[in-house]
Image (cartoon, rainbow, N blue to C red; front, top):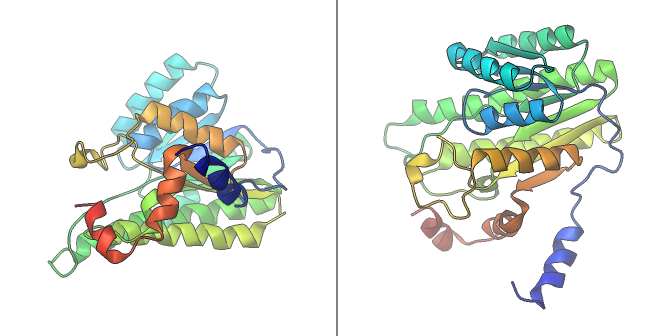
Length: 275
């Protein structure tokens, strides 16, 4: 981007509502996190502890969470770290876990719906059940987490809901229909929720990462432009969350521009993006 283009980009993106102007201070330095056993979630767990949060970490693999808890309590002995096995597709269990975390901490300040799944493959080739499983985790599991969080935050008068989507929510990539659709659905769900809760004391933040080096995308190998490691990704994500961002593309450069362009590319060009 040259010197003449930069002011244009600033004018364009500076007009978007990136920060909730009515955001109150978080009521408690506590966080509930799904999908904490690997990838972005695992790095976020460490970053939260480093920033002074007591954390309630969930994932399906309890043995991995126990190992993570041991490392976190050794590194941050002043922090409270609780782990619990949770499958976000079991919606009643999600609500119980959020309630348990709130009771343990005397309230929650932040809930991060991060659990994710992926399955790339063409439609009509016998992968419907695998594709449905992606939607169950990425969209319905996140909705269950967020629904329970909002119920708690309404009773407490404030808090922050965070949903981890993806830059590819902006477009439908060939071969990635369930992933793109689930992330796009979550993005719109959060947008709708933000309108419901505006000026309520509850902040809603959408986190849309670009390529962060995680198991969910490692099969792409060197086809991951602008790749960053999970520790850097978690730090940048938390910077945006704590700033009260409404929509946080991470890293902001270059993925804000990439996201903008993806939403506008014609199908003939989108076909080449994930080739």
